[in-house]
Length: 168
Image 1 (cartoon, rainbow, N blue to C red):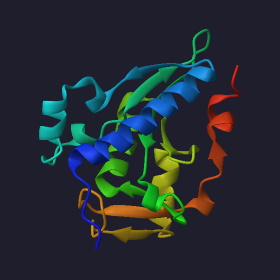
Image 2 (cartoon, helix red, strand yellow):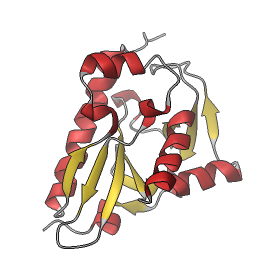
Image 3 (tube, one colour):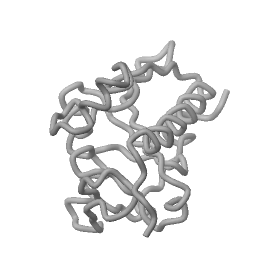
Image 4 (tube, rainbow, N blue to C red):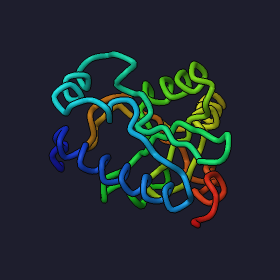
């Protein structure tokens, strides 16, 4: 069996994808700002990782489109090379619940951007889960060991262009 990735290794994957999402949104005319754990020093971020607190799952970014009334919360979901060809996208159960809660509490939609740049709102993902059209797991693989949903890719149709506009 392959060894579980360390927290730092998982964070490197996540940060790389967050940076790619930032670049793609900026190419589409959006300004992107750190939000949630991205605003914290690594020591605090790592400490929160072991605590069952909602701040752990805040969206990564907040973005706005200058000259418009458009703003959104954005959460980038990277994956390891091993899982890139999976038929499913994985999202931690607590993360999805928290993203829906942050969208509701802040009055901004929260968009989840997966490693293949397919996009879904947290509410749309929660509706798929509620219908029962998902699998689930409990960290037997390389990740953090937290429970997660496996959402079939076939349910996620939007991409960056359809949600955030074409590159300028």
